[in-house]
Length: 357
Image 1 (tube, helix red, strand yellow):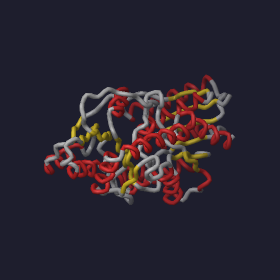
Image 2: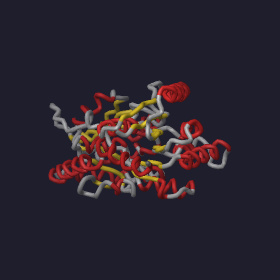
Image 3: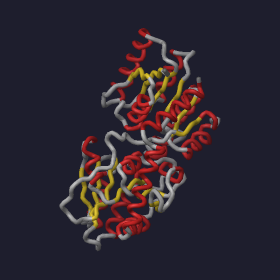
Image 4: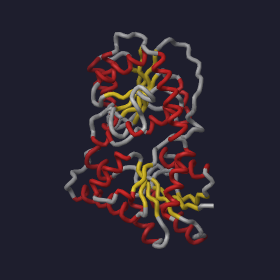
């Protein structure tokens, strides 16, 4: 039996970590877990490191260390502590790209920006293998940080099929519900959803449900008021365990990402996997990352990014074509079962581990 010591900077319940942990265990891997549920990185990092050091005192019979998201700072400590154990590092995202380009908190050439660049590059160099969620994302790491392509392996985000599976939910209304949820980051392009809703306002039976809160919530609220949008229902948040019920009520789901930010073109939104796991027809941005998994009009409808007119047209196309909607839902679900469920994710990681060992 393969034994994996798992340590991560984010909570074990964070989607990326949760699916990987479940996948490994479903595939018969013994996972020795060093994680923490604290809400703050300031609390979480010291806690997981203490757990890590205590585990080392009790046992060292594991085969490999899996550093989960967000693990860039942890890779350095793990490598210095255990020089003879291989490390599989799930980079998942670039701290440099996130802080300097997506969120624009720091300039790339600033001291902090250069520190994030070093953190990404050095953590990948120290690991034996690195997992990322798409080949498009791998290309970014290879080109930006001058790293060897053979070090990287693609592992889709996937979704937890114990929560997200096809459900029949009774509805009393006769609305055509378009569902989206997010954290109101610029990456997501929620403004294009609001503008698309305005375009479709004359269709009185179409209702948009937008769930979430985050940095751009007020900005989106102001946009909605400015446009006088009346067919969007904003819900601040839905508990994770109730999210599948809200998805089940939808007629179509918007996976995204819809912005023109570069990172949006390199990743597949985590919610997209949850939607296809629930056999819902999805609309996603037309980019190289989404095309790794989706084919237009087969298992998703792909639309031009940062284009509210294209998004509105796609929504209307699915609304007026029952057979296309059902086909995309069915084929999307088949895609999930074949490529994105936790067991498949676990098998992909086991292949990487065997390659390392």
